[in-house]
Amino acid sequence: MKKSIIIGAMLAVGLAASAQVARVKSTQPLLQGVESEMYHPRLSPDGSMLLFSSVNYKGLKLYDFNDGVTTRISDEPRAGFDAQFTTDGIRYEVKKQGEYGKNAYASRSRALGKKVKPISGVSVRTEGSVLYITRKGVEKAYTPVESYAGYIWESLSPDGTKVMFVAAGKGVIITDLEGRILSQPGMYEAPVWLGNNAIAAMKSTDDGHQFSSSQIVAMDLNGGNLTELTRPESMAMYPTATAAGDKLVYNTIDGRLILMNLELLK
Image 1 (tube, one colour):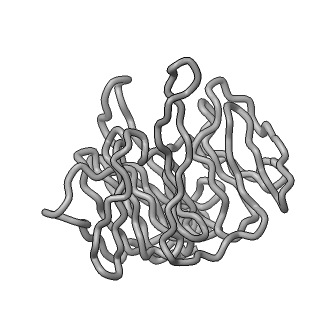
Image 2: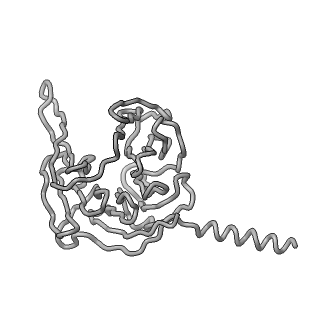
Image 3: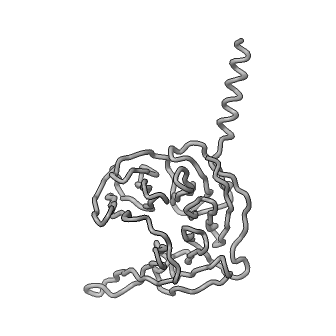
């Protein structure tokens, strides 16, 4: 009896270890031999278009998967910083002259002639260690966790019911639309939604000056069922995914873009 219990426990551990949230169906390099120095990718929600920039965010380009054409959007120094798809185009930043000669930045929009279904009445942003959630035109401020250096990488789940961000020193935080913490998946960077019930993120190590490893991992919203989408030595960084979670793009440390086709298992 004791032996059967031990064997059963070992099988359970084995099953738990093999549990995954996603399976990589295929991978392929993008724009190989055509473009170089490609960083900070951002997929459109439907996966038909991809924004990317240089390592220091200078310039912004748009790749259309349907016709294989790459369009230069801007050559501005900061254009690739937090560039985003909107309901009818893209939004990016440009530098302008501020008060007393100081540099300032302003948003610029460009229409693409293609409508994207919006998440009605909900948007999120962060400023310092404050999370702002706007619902039906009313913005409220929340501080779900204390963080010495602020919140970054904020995003809204595809169904518009959950918010995710990274709090410095605390890791990934997921809240509801009232700023109440739902889960804390762990210490990761640049998290993105894979559908509504899983996320992908960057897991890296460094010596304070340069990266020694970096990989893309997937997990459930509690940080469980951890799935390695790339190996630590791949130096894979800054993932971006479709709303459905069936496609993911990341850049390597040497400026290549890799597309993954995924199957969500949870």
